[in-house]
Image (tube, rainbow, N blue to C red; front, side):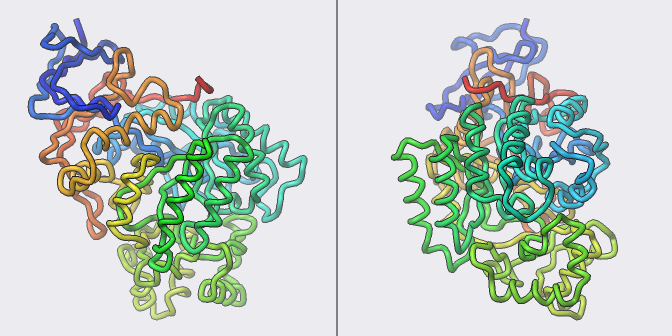
Length: 531
């Protein structure tokens, strides 16, 4: 007898092939594909008549590594059908970490990962993964070794090139993280201290990935004025090291740079024609989200968050920061330049003192505080010890669709929670199906599901998920194609989507007819090496 029988559903199996009406079953934590018309006995039967049955969605870019300790179900993610989540993105994660840098690093991470009651009693990737595997995880969790962590446990937080000895140590630390289960290396080349690494350092780390089969996942140095040079650097890293390249939250920021899109796409084409492996993930919105301190020039971050806060107290250094923001620094993504004070909004602050600025633009923050916008937001970053986040508007719907239809693309959330977050946290995957498939006919449902399931599984080296197939892990979503849609917007983002009826992880139902059923369902996935 099977544990669960799912009958009468329209099966979209993740491969991109034509959907078909059929039945499938779950035994223990595995999928069993049933013959046409076969309806065996089962402990539970779910009638999926008029519903769509798909593999569980895989979110390849998220920021949930510490949220897990407060909400192990990861409710905003599982409610949109996500059954596997990749954490420690943008070169920033909880491990590896060392005692001398731990306090400063905890403050640095707050902007992206939030501040939750995590034990922080780990040092290695293995320690962290063992810790979270004891939680009642809703989705499965996969880990990337963060470049900034690998760098600072090897050479500290300094803004300088690594010595030969330090490069060797970095490669050893990355190899150790990979052996402990990391699926690759994440880099955030706008976030210190990872931003201090030069191309040679990244090529050397890429050779470790080439040896193990891991993937080089990158928030590149520029998604705006210098994006073409930035892409050249990343493609060089892939070419010189032999590793696979995956661009995080791929986009072109700012109306002054939209004319670069054809050249950006040409670079992707040429890299593929040369036989290199390149891919990217994308969230389906025209605005991004990150920590507010990215508006501050890189030199001000030298030495970590504690040093940044000290510099914000210095009137002379503040004026230098403002001058660099207004005039720009070559090669630096200047958020104020490409989004403007009216296009950057505060989404979250840590304390009640400044809650009144959540949802306000930098222009409005300046007016509320009776100061020039930069001084007003500098004060808030200082008062909040860097726990401030933003949303910035960078593109158009046409550009979103252009990238979404690319063969290299898979879907992600880039979800950063807290306050009034970006609506992608709650609705990225349903938005692709409801808006871009059903309403706009940008592409077929089976292609969208492929980009949410099999494509990311293959890209990152997950071998037993992403497809509805015999003996694959029973990660399954049952959805209503007619009603699925994201509901949150930038004013009221904290809204769950409609149309996600059932979410099953490793054979356990964690969203049951739209109702949350928290339990131990997910597990830590560890990279098993090149297959």
